[in-house]
Length: 196
Image: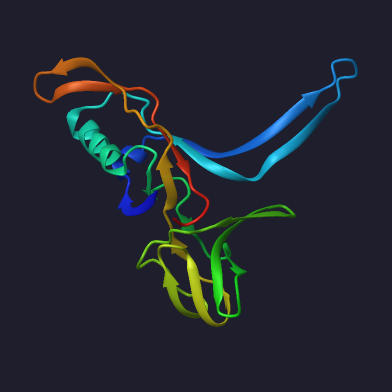
């Protein structure tokens, strides 16, 4: 539906379980033990689960309010991945769109292999050192330049949405000083590849 420029509560995402996920079809040959693999999605989509422990009111109330305002899967938002949120020196890469516009990317290098991830939600105030940069669109990660961009460092959010439309909660017990302790069923968050 729409991108809402809100950040999922960082103190909740700190305890999330998740990371990159590929989709691969594996077909095996029972007789010979051979297998064939078809990579359905060559680029990973990052996925996170945020409901894996009982929560006190100070934790579940912001989560519930955020979920309600994002209307379940309808609207997208910014998500802070505590394990992957910055482009360090040497990791910056740019995909040319036209003569003056480039998509920000992060390079993941291992040995002779390199994978590139589009960054569509850079964080305002963290972008620095990009050669020939005129401006950055913080809603799309597109850099306007006066020449070929290179270098630079920045931090970024993951463009994400909930992958459930129902938030199911269960009261576990009541804490006399803190209130109800609530356990949620699975609440999945998934990356959106493009800018809304």
